[in-house]
Length: 249
Ligand code: CAA
Image (cartoon, rainbow, N blue to C red; front, side):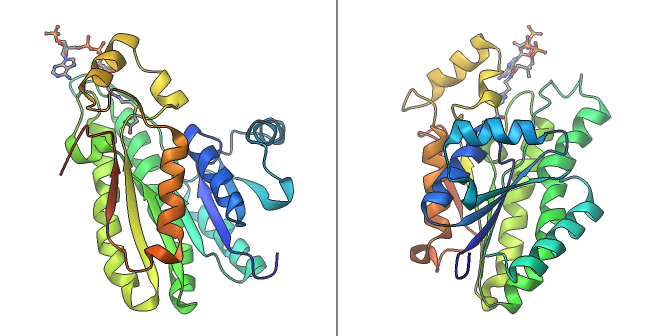
């Protein structure tokens, strides 16, 4: 593990998260795969088997990313063990889609806590260490719906747009210390989250995508690999859109 880059990826067991872990392992990262505290070691074994990566390159961390204290403690422990964390991918996210008129406060706050407040919880404990180390990469997985808005997603769009603001502001703070902070804004991607949508609604969205297809999780993971690479060392505060032309800024 000596000289190996260390990455922490949240939402690791999800559709996009799994592809990100796989792609980073291919780049020889050691990956701490953060999954919800509701997951079990049996889920981990099942996932590992499904994504077919060398278990020596990965370790699970079952953690509630909405819990500030637990996240601080977990990240501090990792920093003590590894000395540094080179890459943090804030990918954990949920949906609670419903029109705003029908939305409950708990549907609002569950999404804001998981998708946006988790960025504070996960990033705050590692950012100072990255700056002191004069190297770090932080990549936040936002969404096209944080850029353009979406009927039924006031909570999700607010959180995903917030991630972009966070990215730009933190990029200023990391710039002189070799820490880049970027977002990726995927469009509709072939994941369980998108498969859970009503078929007629998904069909109508697909029809609006100029490329007439969904993104693949591997396409999103390739963007993570690029932004994490030395080739992207001069890119910071950027949001890389990956949406088949659904929204062009
Ligand atoms: N624009 C304007 N009006 C709309 C609309 C739209 N896009 N969609 C629905 N409406 C209207 C309907 O016409 C209907 O009007 P009437 O009452 O006058 O008939 C009203 O709103 C209610 O529509 P629904 O029957 O669809 O309402 P619902 O409560 O059954 O469903 C919903 C609401 C669950 C939000 C559903 O519309 C939906 O699934 N929307 C898509 C949400 C979405 O895109 N989610 C993405 C999930 S994946 C993800 O988030 C990953 C990512 O980053 C891309």
